[in-house]
Length: 208
Image (cartoon, rainbow, N blue to C red; front, side, top):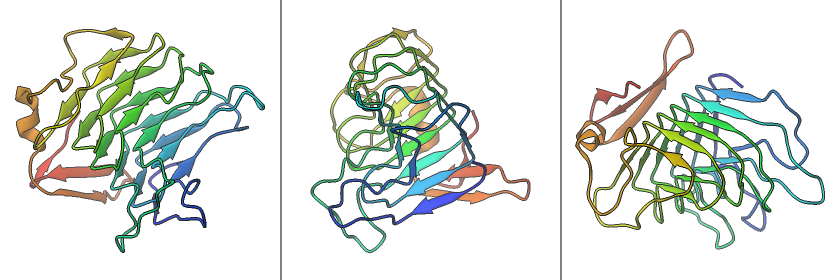
């Protein structure tokens, strides 16, 4: 999926309407690039797996943006929604997704969450800012983390990382690192003429 916006999806129980849902029985080869998921009642991206149907195909999400999920554009919310930016699994089934050069901003729960995916995901060059609970939540698996950034305007929960994470990452543990100065101010985005997603904070373009 290339250069597409998905927003304000909602359902009667407020629990299953995501921006993009590559889950349950989806096959291999799915790629999301230059995509935007905002103001959906549940998650921005949902890669959920179930034991009943087994592992889905590995998904690639790159150069994309997920923000304000869990709250509709009109301010509506639902108590059952998960409200994550990128929800990457389910039910302890390992799938080796590739998650790179994405932004999670101001989602109602986690920015990026493994959601019980104990696989070996590639998680690199992502930016996660001011998500309500954690910017990054990975509590199991052997995923590889490189050059990810986590920032907050105020206080919040420390990121949880299990896997191969080196010093190229700047996760949040009570204070912002030096790279966070580049991601302050209002979020704006647009699609360029060639379809690429252009994201700015305070008028400064995000480059990764």
